Image (cartoon, rainbow, N blue to C red; front, side):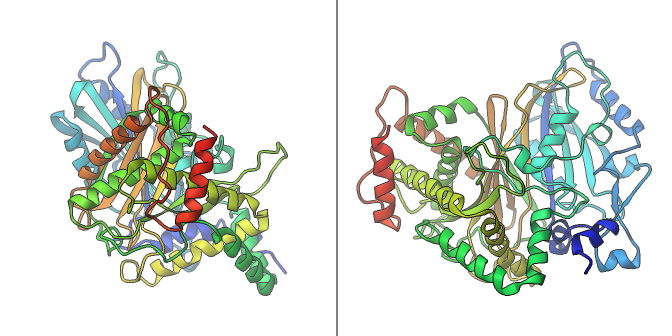
Length: 509
């Protein structure tokens, strides 16, 4: 019997994981992500600096993977998506020079990025576009790159930005990204520790070993796989604060249109580190608490806060700490209560911290096979919901995905122009009208909010409320004050489990 992974590899076909992003796409479900980079003009740069950058980019028409990959239009390619390599890219199809009426502010840039993110990529060409935008205030300019999720995930995209830009301010005339990048690394190679949740990775052009092995196992022994999956789901769910389909209905979980609205916020990373140290939590715990506080404020403002807590779905690293070598995927997903039904910010943060810690502990207890099976079974209902276009019409499995992605750790430059801010924009699904991504870059933590404009037309208010939620946590966990102890009876369920864990953490501080 010929293994399915070998067949797909010889056909240059997309893996089921990558092809799924194409199958999920519709006029409203646009399956491309984006990376927004904002630069200062280099010292002494003339008024034609950005124009020169664009001219240089447009002259570079050869590309490396994944930028040179296009979907085959053959009959077989219509049955199952396949890649083909193009010798040259068309600059008129991929490289665009735009300008805001100077001086362009954050709002004007956000409106433009929202419009660009609402435009589907043309499948007759390699699935990416680059927009160079000038006219920003304070002599800044931006580069916004869009790429289809079938080609590249968000973590790999940020890795390519890291590879493309220089660490040296004196380097000039660097190759364009589509000529300079290295093949995206697996996500598991980029994970430092469990303090930052990550987005799932793809090995572009190759069948994913974890998914393909799972499918092979499925064909070889369904009873064995289903039994392992049932045990995995059961073991992972016991004691965790949120279970599938326990999420309340909300304005976030409605049918969506193709129109996107993007909002961003940029913070000093040290503010998150200080809270995490004082609270004995992780930076990711603080990110979740800031998002939870912002969501509670925002939904209260529009009179749409559910009585029950919102549920988030976060990627979690489950890599062992024993120093032994590991292969395969060390990522799984966890559904957590955001405790948005708790008014007290200290109690809310304690509940989130406890739930996140417990979820990671439960997942870490699972073996590699069980984790793979659990991850597949956890995502399959979401995929089926989207395939049959039921998203937003049935109760949600969870309310909102929140991801925390590592960006470059060193200061980066483009032809001497210092990179000041990096934001990652991601996909929306039917029934998932909001997605939040945090990106760390040097000493900054940047939050992006991608929303369906019809469902959440004033998402910029949510971004502002997250800033207020951060200030609220700082007032509770400032270095000059003792760490506040949570009250003995949190409002969210299960109260007894959450109270025990929160008290234990408090004693250890």
